[in-house]
Length: 235
Image 1 (cartoon, rainbow, N blue to C red):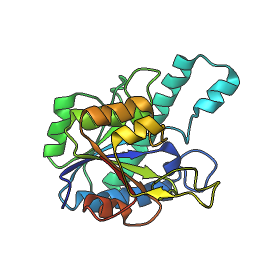
Image 2 (tube, rainbow, N blue to C red; image 1 turned 30 degrees about the vertical axis):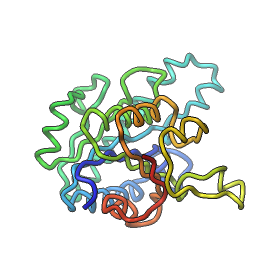
Image 3 (tube, rainbow, N blue to C red; image 1 turned 90 degrees about the vertical axis):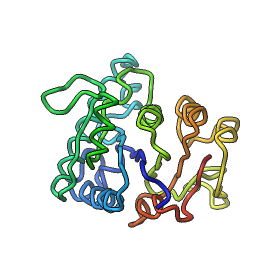
Image 4 (spheres, rainbow, N blue to C red; image 1 turned 30 degrees about the horizontal axis):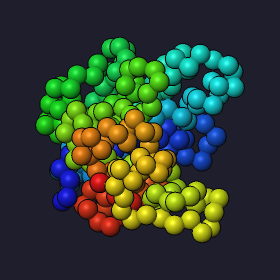
């Protein structure tokens, strides 16, 4: 096994399946089964999930909302997604804790770094929700931050229907070329939209690898953890 502790970053859109918005139970259960596969390898697993299936920044912009207000709504959406994922994982017998950057103690634990690492040492999957707890930061930045805090060796960037990182959008251009391996410096200098620049800088400064892969292909999460050639790796 190549990686002992990983941070899985999933978009909220991954949880809506083929529906227009919201949470699709069958899709969430499919994701939970993939996560169980990597947990069964003995890997410590932390997860950061987005909220785009429930609340999107573009919606807020269209309504003329205050940016900070809209960001807090997005953080609440990630909590809902995290609870749905926890439910699916525990139905499969995977002990799971949801830890939030926002104080919602009735439904999940507050995020405390030492407690998070202790949960992992006890074999629990930890789902980090609420983003960073502050507006103006994306869940990509939250993923990079949590990965650094829990000493994750790699961030698994699970993409919805995209095989890796391309020089241009493969859904628009048939001649798009996929990169097999990149450096963090190259990503930042060329503005590749793997994650936002704040998150990319955090990964670069803390020497955290990224593996960008298509999560829609069954077994890809496990292949990524086992170090098989898959998608695009950023070092």
